[in-house]
Image 1: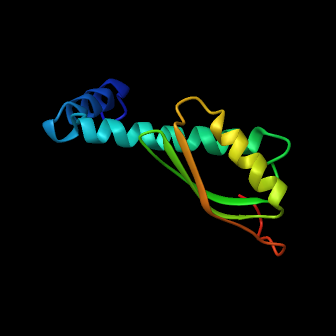
Image 2: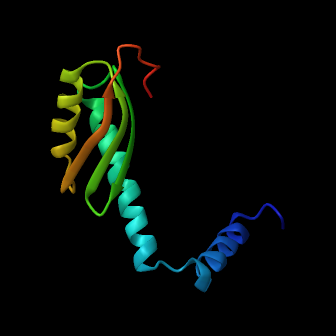
Length: 108
């Protein structure tokens, strides 16, 4: 039966257990980095001082967060850095590539 959900579950389980898809230390760290970057983006979006006027790319590497992009005002840059430092798992923040731009593209 083609519409049997158990068939699809068995297929997914079989593929996921293939040695090619086994987690490695490097892949586990990559997931941690992506998760931390997502948590940082969420914290920036949730803070009332950093919800607008921010157009940043966020990357993370073993607790070190790197910000790149632009903000509308220097005070927003400072607020972003403060918010990021409060996110659990962040050990360092680099905002050297964050510029203040009075012409600001739509924030993401």
